[in-house]
Image (tube, rainbow over all chains, first blue to last red; front, side, top):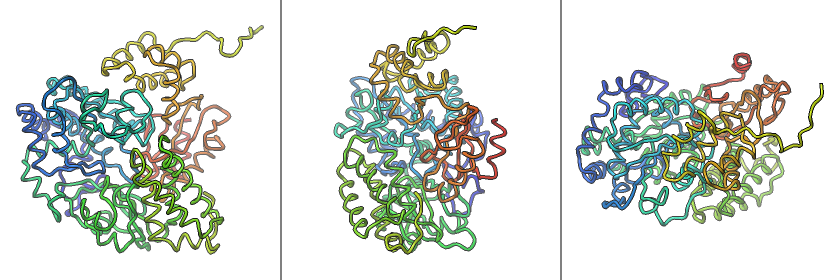
Length: 425
Length: 170
């Protein structure tokens, strides 16, 4: 349901069924709601059979990349020559995204159950749940839930631990997260080796997002076929997904829909549409790292992995940032570039310099000191920031800049031509 | 009354990791295959006990975990939530990233800086009570503007709620 709002009839409520239901947080309450039945089922299965079931379900990673979950698990060695690890990515920091926070706040046992099933499937004895440092409330709730589950000895030989981040967006990148767990700076690593070969502490590792793992118990309970049938458009995109809607919107919040759901309906029906007297200008559908859509594109996009690519953007994390006609797109794009400049780990030159300089140029344009050539310069810098670095942070900075200039060019030109009052950035 | 002059840096150092805090760290160390794995949690313990992390604290952490002080410093300076200098009794973090900016986060910042007496971002109020900083995305964009006061996560803050909050925490 669309916490903090009541469930909308067009939602498909699976993961969010107990959002707002504080009783579901306790072990007793969770078991009363059918919790931990799937874990019991999984622990009695061969790990490969669990992986096969998830593979057959078509579940894809909900953190942003959309990689098939079962396939990722199958990359882990079948023969164990030492410890295997699971890392749970609860470092939710992508601007516009606040779904994992709700999963942990309301249904902490859903995550623990999914994590224990995943650990069993990949033959891991230890799972680290990496929660961003700012999430003090989800941390306390997860800590309580984990203590209850440990007392009840629910996880067999598997041990799950919470690991607190300390303020670094980049640690949501899987190899940076592994470094952070090892007690290092959160610098992404060059791949290969991939985590399944040499991950955290040099051992085979799988990293999964919170929402992905929370979906796993439902799949084991209802079957792969049930999951595959949760589909409104492309058979490659199945299941439900939480969309976090924020920015200029009447009813911000999380909404859970079947993949392939029209973005237009999400915005105008579920999330209550624009504020009174306002019209839609544009929208970022998958967290700040994906290209911006203009109104026409947004209103014709289907929310699945392929539907977003068709419109030149990505489903990403499902963080939907809405801009109405009052939004200054130049300012907003500068604000996003500044975010990436702040969060760059600084090991790749293209990213360290590119995020900083694009921010400075955007600030200069806003200050009324921009030149016509600045737009080409921004595009040239963006080109050098795309596909050339260890991780995709600099690509993520370039995405809103390139799409923003392409789709809202007149707003940039107005500042450059002195037709718009300069803004202090 | 006479006071004895103690040159800076030569004061007696009181270690963080003794008694209960040391026991806590030892429990944490067991969760990782290397001692270094416990570095982030160890730094959180230092900050909880001392309010910030000094160079002397970093040297202690390095000794306890068998890593170099340079490594510890590198980690402390990488992560924005570790304080490298003392902050006010209440530490306020305000989200101003795009979604919150769209919803008026800048007004919340102005109200907080003024109401707490901090005067400017990053500075501590003269009475030592408040430090206010801007932070990037707090991950609660649907509840703009979220702020953290110490460890309390507060959603949907608007400028008119600021005086009440400042009074409550005092």
